[in-house]
Amino acid sequence: MAAEAEIGKWQFGNFTKILEPQLAWEKFNEWRVGNAFVFYNKVKGKYWLYYSASMIKLTDANVDEPMNLGLAEADSVMGPYTRVVTEPIQIPSGFSGLFIKGHGSLKLVKVPSADLDEDGVGVAICNRLTFNPATNQTGSTLSLLHTTDGGFSWQPVIAQFIGPTLKEGSWKEAFCYAFDTVLDPNDASSVLIYYNARNGWKDATEQVGVSRFPLEMIIKARTGSADGSILNTGATFG
Image (cartoon, rainbow, N blue to C red; front, side):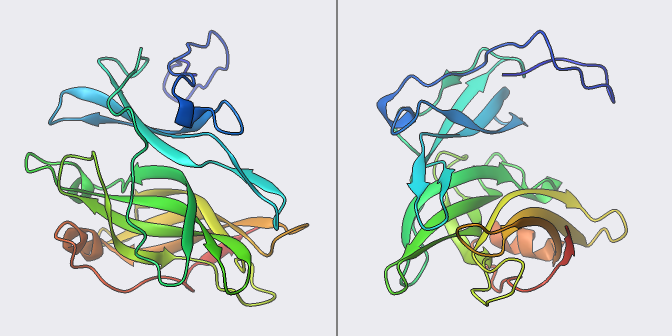
């Protein structure tokens, strides 16, 4: 749902339904569409909406998480939105020893050098749910992605971009997920990423952290050549 408001004045009311579950892969375990990321696609002249759908139960953490990714578009940010794809967006794993169980959200990095261009190239981040058969544990990791076909498919550039430490006592031992990015206001050569993390599985607590990575990494990611990760960096805000 969406609601209009004056700049700086968010008012919750007079909602407009912009998308609801319709396809079979949007109704698995739970009829759900959410985790919306809307941006203006200058190449297409449309507002694009990436969203997650359906639900999977992570029993070891006792939490419900999204499974699939979809894409819709509209002439107005308020919709109505129509689906651009009728099957879930597939992203190659890029992980060693882990299985992909689902996708939480996909968002373009919020700097101009990440935008989709006329050649169909762009850079995004996606939080991906994983399963480790060696430990029988689930997890969530933020992956840096790029597209070369205008955002219809995505490939990992750095699969383990920001991931769990798997160290007992760490504030992000098990999961790194809900996130957003912004150009560092104090350093134009850096990007900040804020994200949610979990210090374990069942009965664990969550905190918000922030990490910084070089803008150059986004420029390199456009060609699929970036490397490195920011696994263990960042301040924490409880």
